[in-house]
Length: 286
Image (cartoon, rainbow, N blue to C red):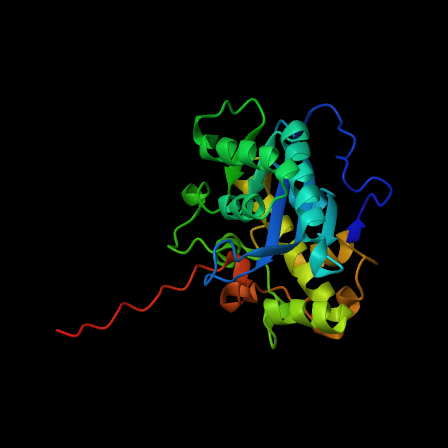
């Protein structure tokens, strides 16, 4: 298992909590898809971002640091271990954070539960039920917020893809990892050929999802904001994950750091966050 974190000694523990803050925990999972077989999805990477914001007022997110942990399988047979870590991470988030968030997080939880070893099922089932009941939850206690379904009051556009939500709100989430090769192809290169750059690209892609989801959730809950001119999330990643992956110093990535526009409107979406392609209707013989 490949584990990266701002807290390498205790990557699966929440950061120390200060008084007077509201804590957000954003989680994102990547998986391979196979709709031709039952439970054909296979999770292989996930990340969590911890974002502590003042409970009073609306914080400038450009000035707020965050903590994070990223987990990636080193071998395909480590999936059970990854799912156990993910289940424990979800439970830890529920115990430590005031708001647990994801983008279409029900899908992440569903895939994790479908592939979970027996001893990891209970916390995932509990999380799925809490997600379903999130709009009835007491907002003063730990609760879920889903940025796909709960941020509509901020948006004028119809699309709820994460990249489109971020772009409309002024977050530049350009994904250079997907310009020439798909996310599943990068993952295959890692598993089949030990191609480290492929794994690093997907890890950064996944962490970008968690960071941007945390920011959208903070905006949704009126806890955080960013300048009207926009916020380059790749610059946030370059600073917040400095030294974690060589991909962050690749010229393809660093070329985005000085861009002041928000070019992510036409960016691709990783397959585990893209809508399922609709099957063609059967042809009629009548």
